[in-house]
Length: 180
Length: 170
Image (cartoon, rainbow over all chains, first blue to last red):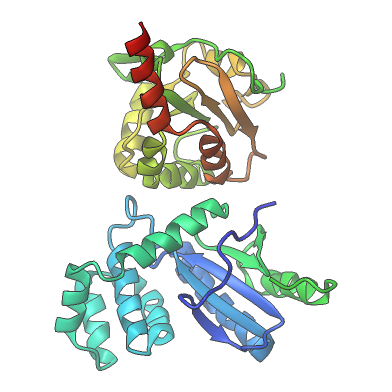
C-alpha cells in the first residue's frame, strides 16, 4: 500500500482544524478536469467534517499535457503568500475551462493582488522549487495521476465522489489510534 | 497467463518497430539501464495517465541512468499519433506482429483479451531483470516502485568511476 512519504509540514497549505482527527492530503493539477470535478466533492467533505478534518493541497502539475498547470500553481502560491491561497485555489478550478495566463492575472486582480508582483514572482521562478518538491514527494508516495488523495497518510484508491470519500474518512476516524 | 518474468532472469531480446519505418532493439541499449513499461492499449484512460506521468518524470529516470520504453500491441501508426497527442518524449514500441510476441516472452501477455498486462521491468547494464512488477489492470502503478528500485542500484556516478578504473587496469 502506498503511503505519504512527506509528512504534512509548515510549507503545506492547510485548511481546517489544528486538532483535526483526520488529514486529507490532495495532490492536484489546476488544469486537470478530474481535479476540477473533484473540487465540489472536496468542499462537501469539508462541510461534513468541519474542524475534525484538515485538508492539505499539494501541487502535482503534469505540464507535458497541461501547459498552464505550472503557471496556475505559481499563481496559487503567490496568492498564498498574500493570504488568499484557498480563495485562489477555488477560483482557478471554477474558471478552469478558460484557464490561461490572462485569466490567472485577472483572478489576481480580483483578489486585490498586484499583477506586476505576480509576473515578477513567476519570472523569477520563486515557487518552482516548492512546486517541484510537492511533485517529487507525490511521485515517491505513489501518486499516479490527479487527483490523488491520502487519508491519514494512506493512499485512497476509491472514487473522488463525496459519499465515497466521506465513507473512507469515517472509517479512518473510527480506526484505532492511527495518527500521522 | 504465465507469470511475468522475475528478477534474476535475463531480459529476452527483441527488436520492434518504434516508428512506421524504424526498429529499435533492446541490444542497442546494452550497457544502459532500461525501464520497460508494458501497457494494454494506446488511448485508454489509465494508460494515458500512466504514460503521462512517466513522461513528466523522464528527467528523474535519466538522472538515474535509465531509458524508458513503452510497449503495447498497438501498431506503429497508432503509436505515432498517440505519442504526438500526448507529447511523449520516449519511444513506444509496437508489439504488433506477431501480435504480443514480446509481451509473451516477458510473461505478461493476456491471451484472453489480446493485450499486454500493465507490467514493469527494470533491466540493468548487463541485460538482467533486476526488478519487475505487474499491477492490477485498472490500477495505474505510479512511479514510486521504479524509482525505489533504481535507487537500490549502484549510483550511476560510482559506475562511471568503476568503468574508468577498469579501463586503467586493462
